[in-house]
Length: 61
Image (tube, rainbow, N blue to C red):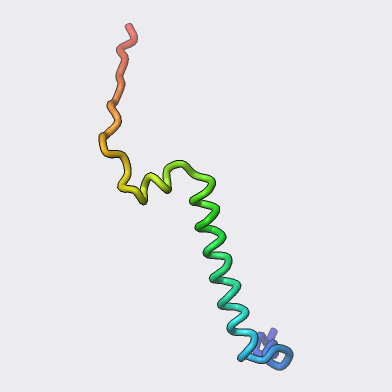
């Protein structure tokens, strides 16, 4: 298949900005989804945990 024929249907001056704009919008939407649906990512941007979590061990006997 010849993928170069797309430019006979869509002008490169219109198609390339649409392609790059759609990639940018998708990337922004992915970042928004990560920020709004996770609990660890905003904390990561704020510098993470200030104090390391204590490791709890139990001896089963």
